[in-house]
View 1 (cartoon, helix red, strand yellow):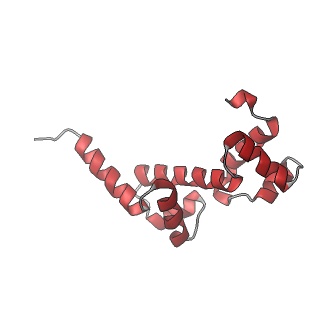
View 2 (view 1 turned 120 degrees about the horizontal axis):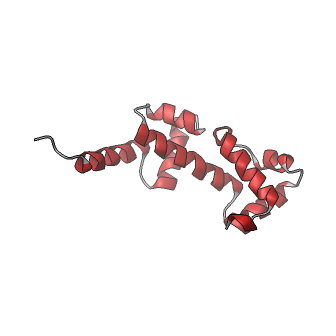
View 3 (view 1 turned 60 degrees about the vertical axis):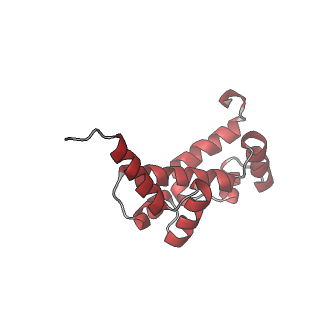
Length: 121
């Protein structure tokens, strides 16, 4: 429930939403709310159950999924726009968080889309 989140966590989440592509570090997040790195880690653990780094990666992977579905960008470009410029690292993270490679994800979605579209004959 959002209303029960501390104001400083909400500020950090808004900041991450604005600049997740730059993958802010815990130290940078701590500076934003003038608190310690351990305070930031504790805030995320207590209220979201994950680390700030995991939260940011999840946001990057959500962006990547959206781009893979809504554009024809090359996977390297999707990686770049999601905030993970190293394509090998991006593919590894994508597989870890989504369960399949970016290429496989796009291929499966293309198949599902073509099955959903009414045939023209």
